[in-house]
Length: 597
Image 1 (cartoon, rainbow, N blue to C red):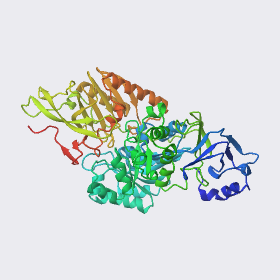
Image 2 (cartoon, rainbow, N blue to C red; image 1 turned 45 degrees about the horizontal axis):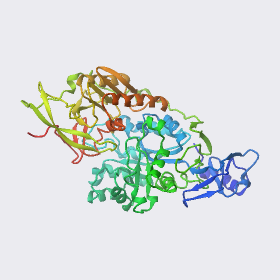
Image 3 (cartoon, rainbow, N blue to C red; image 1 turned 180 degrees about the vertical axis):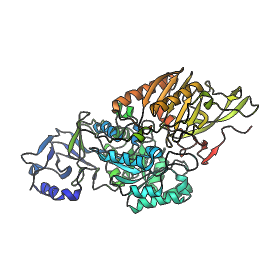
């Protein structure tokens, strides 16, 4: 834990005045000032007790016999990068291993919403994530999840979050606000529970996260804005970004493993000229393969620059803008006196090579290699035993019976859209054999099932999905199933679907791919069925094999697994699946699988 400013202020002042030596001085570089948006050649930095003490043209007066000198050798000094919205569980890693993966990429602050584990383990799960986050050598702030379930009446979670839970969490040291308010219909209709959670957050002086997953920018959107959310990351076009900032919200633009929403929105700044300080960059989310192979927030900043953003503006969007939004401008997000000494040395502001990372005044990575330990929490046994199927599943559990006497049916089909979170509500004419509706490989229509896994009811909800392009006899099952995190099984063959589901019951959760009755990929996620304690590199290798296996089964989508994991997210249009049935998210109601004849 870093000491508070009040605890170290006397020494910071003494170092800045030259009365005491600094712990570390960085000199010979070019300082990027995100407050004034300028590069200050030759400016030097003195660090004491994990915070910046002096930032100016000459720190010679801060150097003593034991002061560490870091020669920047012409490199740029930029603030440590901040991820404004993300879910650690989506990386399939614990907070410790996630930190270990992103630190070499220059991420020193994360604002995380652990609503995945909240759906499985409730408030206790949030506390476990919070506690491990607080142990790390970088800043991992926690937003208290707001919506478990995300849409009451449309899904059943393992645990529910209450306003009382939110009020309690607001007293924890690492809680920085309320997680994304996904139940936007609840806010629009002034649901007392949702408003109580927002009120508890605002009473604590903390930030309310938004999630308005609708293209409707009329009265419904204005009602949502009036309900208190301070930001939103669900925008997909320039009009969305503009609408949010005009309502006093921050527009969070995401580049994750599967969501590419920066390019379509950043024109609000680069072409329309809106004030960039109201725009923030985030990932929401990155899986382990992306972290290991491509990067984290450094990847997002590079992408924003490639989309036309001035490099200094892009850096603001990933540093000071984020800190200011969460009320932490005096604590982090810039290289300025009193702030946590989070700084990156890089040779270029466009390609952004991360050559040295300093967090809280301590070097934590050099040349892409971490130099510190990331402590692990001792996760309890019951957090590792969360997959309860209630029975051994059989192929018959995945049969979809046709209406009596029907030879064909017109079925509603979830249509996957590449690189986007929304789906399309499609229909398909499907054949009936022996009273059972069949998928249609030629038309790209596979089966989807939502298997209840929290209470062991043995329940299976069946439907159809298109867009993956699967061929042959296969199935993919995952206990990562945003947000209720039951089990999603997608396949072309019911025997393989049963095999895949039962396999995850055996290993306690994860992702598996079966083809022709044989398992060809497995990622074990024993903690809450969501996370592994293995190193990111190990998980990434298994995840890469899983992606290869999906391709071997005919899938050509970019980051198709991320699409798979969102098929039960009943707060993003248009069509989803839950343990209660097929969900029409445009109307927020359960709908029939078949069209009326």
